[in-house]
Image (cartoon, rainbow over all chains, first blue to last red; front, side, top):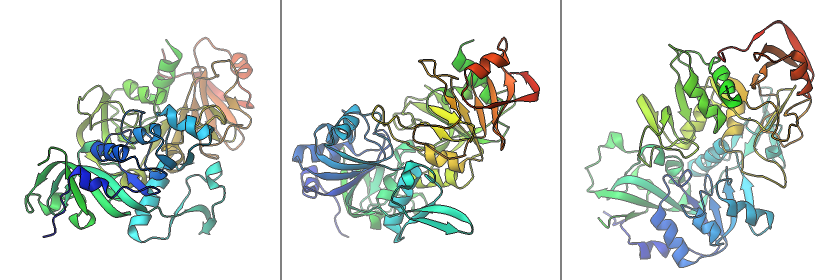
Length: 219
Length: 217
């Protein structure tokens, strides 16, 4: 079996200037903090960050914004991190605001081989600007295109060595869909167990989707 | 009684036993505190679960509501990912959403996600909720802090949704969005129709069966 375990230094080799990265989490709950710190430590720049929100300045992906490592952020909410708004208004940071359900569905499309999603969300608002409208059975939908990343950084409670994952409560959020939508998927886990110790019925993300595993406690 | 409590109490009356309900951040979250006796609802939390409990019920940092507050989950609750969460919302599986508002109008438009040049927090899940929930209730204070009207003929802030609002609840009354415009159906105790009209920019129709606001006294 392929060894998927990495230490944090090895993981940071995947972080490059100009990369597009998806990071799981909702207000930093379910964000792989060690991996985010590793991006900060490595100092890579011009990142395109796809994430639900920019958290708070000192937690989760908020640190990447404060550290000015991000060129563009695609998110549904930036209000809890004043730094994001400040850089956006100063035109130092490009922000694409996407309705949360649309963001989830665009990521799902990116990981599922779909050319996009048709949704009523945003019809009649500024979200529809520059988007194709498609009529299906008399209803007008917006075409929302798929999102894909070079690297996805996700957080799970537990993995087996094959990369099968179990998430913890509301820390699941965007992690399972991001695990499908990137060239390289790195998971940070609290616990690592042998293959076979997770019952197949309880697996939430199949190990074949996970390329690399970082265990917080060193395991 | 404070304005916010009145609004939350009245909005709570709209919820029916067994409803699946999503409450917005802030004032709408308070609605859960005033459910009438015998009414059990399942609260959906768009960060990924159903069966949201009370704020402060848990100390588990992985169990938070969509505002990031620690909260509980009731027996019978279920966890899921963000795609499932919004499939529930957009797919018509949520009966009612109660949201706050910066502005709403007589066409049922809602603006609650940005003030250009001043405040751009983002729409979060609000745009999905207004098109997906079967019933959309706006629960907000009647006027802005500077006294200006929030219930307008037509919203001038960027919209969250077009023609999506069913009911508006404020501390002055309850307004139903109809094809003709806004219909005042309930009025707060001690408030006159003239007062409501003077604090509302939208054209108002007054119900023939205008009654005192429910659940506030």
